[in-house]
Image (cartoon, rainbow, N blue to C red; front, side):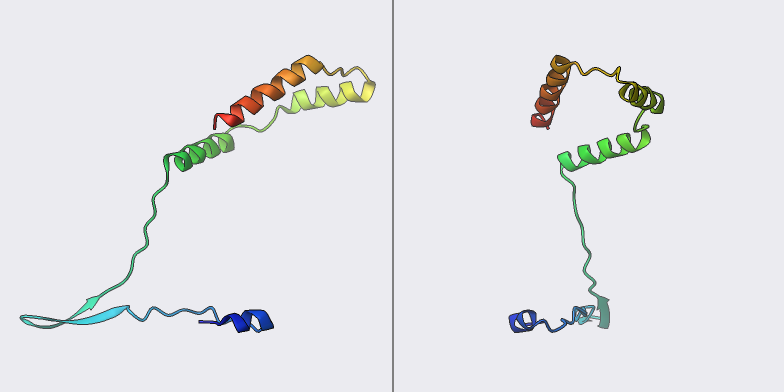
Length: 103
């Protein structure tokens, strides 16, 4: 294991690890047997993580935008006819803020 002095001096650190407990000898009444003592890792996901994963998969399967609508808005901005409804914009911003608080 590297000491803190190696980190401070900027020297490279060897991060190779070996598992010294891969095998363990054990004696059994009928004779000696070799037991493989490998560690296994496990994890579990919270309900919130599962919900986020499901939303991520749902979003990945949907199209991200309507190209025709984007083209129409671009044209309206270019010719000066695009108008922003400030009340609708503010209402939608508050709605989305409320949605984020509910997560």
